[in-house]
Length: 181
Image 1 (spheres, rainbow, N blue to C red):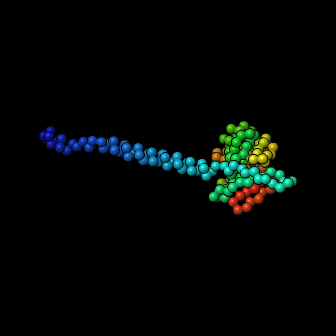
Image 2 (cartoon, rainbow, N blue to C red):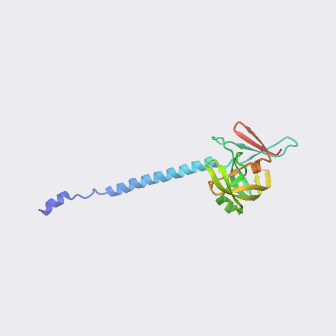
Image 3 (tube, rainbow, N blue to C red):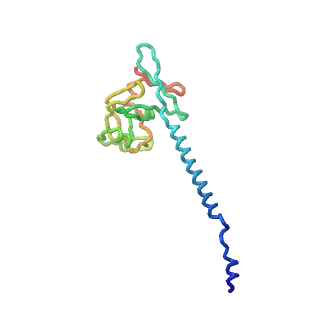
């Protein structure tokens, strides 16, 4: 065989073709990255706690907080556990305040006796704890029974009835009023 004929069949890639492939891959990687970051930002805004509005009440009634519902009808509020800011999801179906394990560790809550709880996702292990001080706006309680819930997502704590039972709850349209009786 002739060397010249061998070269006729050996064709090199056109100049710049590998660069075009890498640029295309880079473009789609950037698009996916920005899409992911945009979705995370959107979800974070959807979960953002509603700052409590303090309601002026008639004489003799105690202070109140009004929360606006989300599009899904949930009520979220920023509060404080032992002086640490915490985002809460108001959950009147929860017997006690329930705190994710990571947040409980960060705040310094002590794990007590283990137990089991029926949750929306089935049976879950929980640990008893005591909150020295819990407040949302002007509403504050001390020595609030609570649970540390390792299975609870780290985004927010559940504001359950161990706190809420001390207040009057009134829901109208898309607002929840929590008021001292």
